[in-house]
Structure formats: C-alpha cells, structure tokens
Image (cartoon, rainbow, N blue to C red; front, side, top):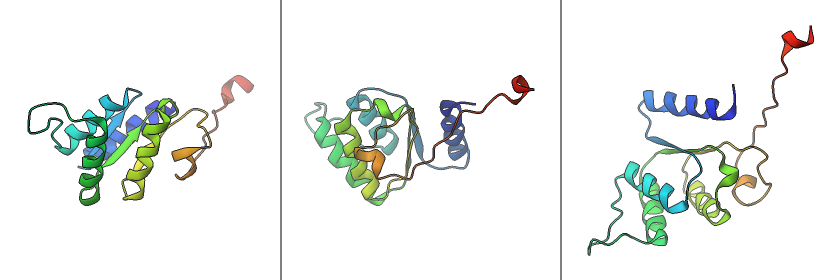
Length: 129
C-alpha cells in the first residue's frame, strides 16, 4: 500500500461518511482553485461573466471556509507551488482540515505548520525468511 492508495482510502471514507471533501493530485493553482470553488459552490465568474482572478478566488474561498466545513486532501503535495502552499496555510489558519501526502516534503512553508507522520516503507518479511 502506498501513500496515494492511503489518502484515496481516507477520501473515499470521508465521502461515504457524508463529509464534504475533495482530493487533489498535482495541477496548476488555478485548476485546483476552480475545483475547490466547484466543491464549495463559489462562482468562478464575476458579474460581467468573466473568469475571476486567482487572487479573487482565493479570497472568496477563504471567506467560504471561514463559515463552512470541508476537508482538502492533496496527494504529492510537495509538487504544489510554494505560493499556493502559503495560501493553504491561510486556510489552515481559519480551521480548514488539510491532509498533505508527500514524498520527501520540504521542511518549509506549509509543511512546518502541520502535524507530520512519517511512514517508512514496509520490508517484505517473506523475502527475508
């Protein structure tokens, strides 16, 4: 069992328990923001019908999360852009539960503000006997 399998199982269990949550693999910040907005029901277009800027979406999502509850799960979070991870820290600061799965995560920005569990690879016991 690998980290991707593990976080997908957590996501599926949360969904089956009725928890609002979303699972993300590495993508551009705008793609991820649009998916979060879709989950939250936040309109990605302004009153003129134009796409909102990344910064506007970020602010509106922070407002949404300040009064709503949802879990965000990021696989391969070490590939997320630093600027985006800093925005995720703002979400964490308003109480958004965030699960980050990463291989060799940097010991900077968001990664120093979240509890850390390191899982070591399992040795194949049968091959050693």
